[in-house]
Image (cartoon, rainbow, N blue to C red; front, side, top):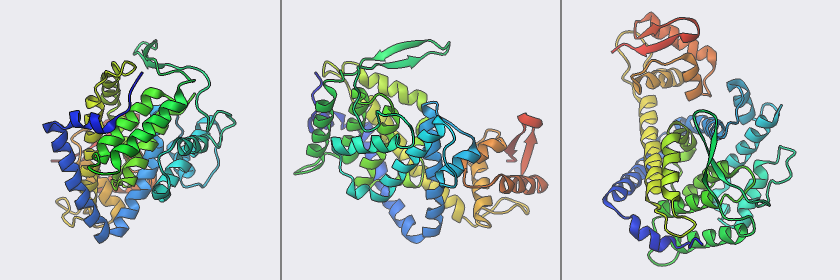
Length: 361
């Protein structure tokens, strides 16, 4: 049986690597606070983008998707769901908005977790939303050839309510009182244990990412409001699953190592803070590319498209830009690409569906 003691476990996690990660994150958190105070209009734009990307990425990890146009309309509540995938996307949108706006009033308790899970499925006809699993389940790994193998067997449905209670208590004990554990370490350990308990019939992955945001926000690490952490996880999901697998070994026997997953999550959080610095810097920079191309500061949306080219050496498709910057219309993207091509600032590669654009360097 797994034992939950995040204070003691945290002592084993204080290595030079985790210390460097935690120090960098705390320093970035301070810079973020200053930027938010000085540039509220820019930050508002980042919030809109992050909500769309978070809703899209967290659901796509689970194979739930819709078109870019429908996604934007659903997140902005300009339409209603048309099918099961869109119903689940709408549920994630609602829970994410609740966490963004009311995290200080949402404590970590089993009842709150059940309520968030209920809201995740509130747009669907499914009846298990807001209820712990009623049958035992397994965590499977999907192989490249389409076959599946059991990666981990979570605790039984009968044991689930008590284990969730113990994990919540361990988190509160670790983060309150004298000499509290760094909340990021406690968050990573709790989220990992939640994933291992796998307490629901469905929605465990999405709930784990929502709870990550909730606990981070409650601890003052709210970078996920401005840069989608779920989006970063989606783009590193092979590493994400490897870290989960490495930390899972021995969990049922209380002999697992939290280290791989903790280091992965801290690295993800640090990446989000660095992305925040880059995006705010790119939007506010008055230094544009050579020639007559629009500068990053000349027009916010055009500037963000230019900044996207600055951040990658690989050719970019129009669809990549629309996915990375979902609040920018296709018309604006096409207009900006034409401008950049006209001043020879980007190069067009390929044709038709294979068309890509790359920055001239």
